Amino acid sequence: MSTERLVVIGGDAAGMSAAAQARRLRDAGDLEIVVLEQGDVVSYSACGIPYWVGGQVEDRDALIARTPAEFAARDIAVHTRTRAVEIDAGAGKVVTDAGERIGYDRLLIATGGRPNRPPIPGLDAPGVYGVHRLDDGAAIRAALDAGARRALVLGGGYIGLEMAEALQRRGLEVTVVLADPLPMQLLDADMAERVCAGMGAMGMEMHPDQAVREILVDEAGRARGVRTDAGSYDADLVVLGLGMGPEVALAEQAGIRLGTTGAIAVDRTQRTRSHPEIYAAGDCSQTFHRVTGEATHVALGTHANKQGRVAGSVIGGRAARFAGVLGTALTKVGDLEVARTGLCTTEAEQAGFDYRTDTIEATTRAGYYPGAEDIAIKLLTEAGSGRLIGAQIVGGPGSGKRIDVLAAAIWAGMTAEDLAGSDLSYAPPFSPTYDPVVVAARVVSRIEQG
Image (tube, rainbow, N blue to C red; front, side, top):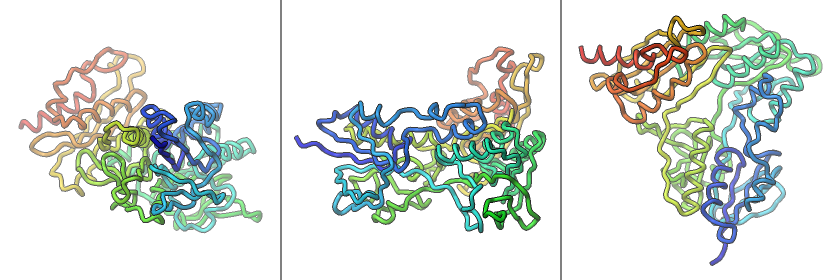
């Protein structure tokens, strides 16, 4: 039997999960695995960069799960500083920036996401930093060590919030400039207002509804602030948190079909819909929403790792299917925890749901127990049936991970009444007698019952 070759483009979450799973199922004599990674490291946590910048994580290498040498010991050949510049799907070859043509029997595209970079003059100036790779984190840390004191964060999504907290922890004055009316656009406005108020209470300057028109630079060409239609704001460094899109340039040039979201169209096994020998996983690939069944693109490491494992299983000969997403996500800014799952009201409307919303306020622990913090939970349910279709949480420490209970309930198709009767744990240090999740579900189910 001849040895097949799997080539993986991209050496982070999806790519290395796929390579590792394929190797578990097929030995080196049966399947050769080659990974092409344009950077210096593989299998690293981009999600950890804000916490490295903020000082909670001191050592960069703590964010690296495995090294190329560790993968080599498992017969997975990792080529760092090697950029794939072309996929010749007809010939079954990948062309590298060094001109090498590497043949494949199976190909996995795991090119990840591309940070959104709107056409703003000065966006490429020194002193403007992304938060995408470990080198970005190192550059921001170097700027802080050089004496930066004022920071501008552009964008109010997960990365924007996390970087605002990280920079404030390092003693900088932090200003957040948003093109949107509120931070966290995946929350409903009433919940996002709580986030905005919390950030203001921390001493951060918030400037919503102000699209940046220009990055201001000094005589040396280095960023010194931004200009919006409402005015200008000075800074020693500018950090971009403007969201991510799928990185699909290689796939598009190769004629691989893209989906309606602009990401690579794949089936439930992560096989591309246009080329049966080519797979795609992670932030570059399209997936589907569990509640609506519609195509979606959600750039999260949890999905990337699971999709990579599915692709690796199928390549390795074991049946596997990706089960879809709810967009469950969790972050924090200071002591304020923010979480969401399923649909927000805008998404529910777009999907054609007849729905209702209910919001409750409670505490994370028994009210008399030290450290009890406020928590707000908002539930979206399908009108009539009471089926849970979305949830959002904003509150103090101990709030955010409750979203997992709600995500599991939505995943399982539970109604608010089902959840209201569920057997959740109780002890004063952890919860009131009735957990806030149960209280929210009881409110909904009581109303549904008339």
